[in-house]
Length: 552
Image (cartoon, rainbow, N blue to C red):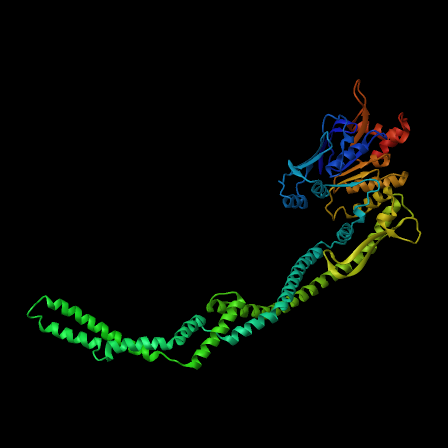
């Protein structure tokens, strides 16, 4: 609810404060008094663009500030949270236009862009001005209206739950299919690489071992020569070194009793003998292990050549790195097989959700089609009452092939303004005044069922009088039982229905420019103001009596 609107240095307003109340707020005043100017200032709060032409005093900035009671407005609280703006039960929205024409907007002292301001304030104020067709050109709004009067809240919630899951699963399926397609492009090549590595069947460190073995085989003759010569000197020559050491050891041991110091030398000589004997044995074993097998050398060379080729191909340095690549390729190819199963499972899940979604959408559609007939009839009754006797309104529900956010229907409001037999979408068929009355009729039918922001009607009664104007007043009064309504009017029948009367007038003071002022009327002041709307500036007793009867 709009609690207060403060305006400074805007058009012909120097300083002005307007405090609407709950219920039906009636705004009256002579043409040119500034009613539309106040709405223009309010439009700045709603995110409209402005320039320095709105400044009275070109040396001072224009400031428009509005206070809204937003307690219980969950949609607005969530929208603030999405924009990272502090929530307060009384929300302060301010718009400033400086002398250079630059504009700034604030919500609870947090700077915001105009598009953000516009989006958030639509949750607080619904402004119906002449030629404002936005709401009736909004398919989302038309669907909300029909669902509200049909009592489809629970079905809509159920459908929204299925739809959110359906969208999530559909997105997952698309991602899996895209991943599969990407993998499919590479899978044949990866399979070739894996087959090549599987066929090579390298063991751990095999290439490095083959390189070492090949070196050994290539120099086998040299190795044998050295080993045989060593063995010959140690154990097989005319005077084998091992035998000579043994003979020296025996001689040293024979004089240990004669010379005790020789005992330690003899012990060391014994160690040398044992070590040389062991070395001679190992040399003999190594000599037996050396082979000059040409076929084995060929096999080793082929394995090493294959290994080097694969190392170069995969850009790695060791056998174990090749084995890691082999394992990774195997995993990736297995994953491409697993994704087939995941796609199939996800497809089944999507189909199951689609069945649930379609069933709920069908229930919604049935309820909408049934309600569309009754709703159209109710709107047509109200249009006749508010001065549109020749208008024919129809809410049409059309099936869609694919599910959408609100169901599998399209809802469109049509109007044949003059029984031409050629209905058009409402926003194309109705004039500005008619549009406001159509919107008033629709919202009066949905007042109990829909959460609506502060509703502002600018001359909704244009072009009507008498009984039609009276019925507009009745609809506004009924609507105000559920929502704050502000209505600018020139009709006494409408003004008499108000619970809070704001009178806009111009004030001229000596040596000061004319400026707009607002007075709150009550009692006889209100009677007089309504009587002037009936009988002119000097209303007679009949006009005053008529005003009292209208108010009663």
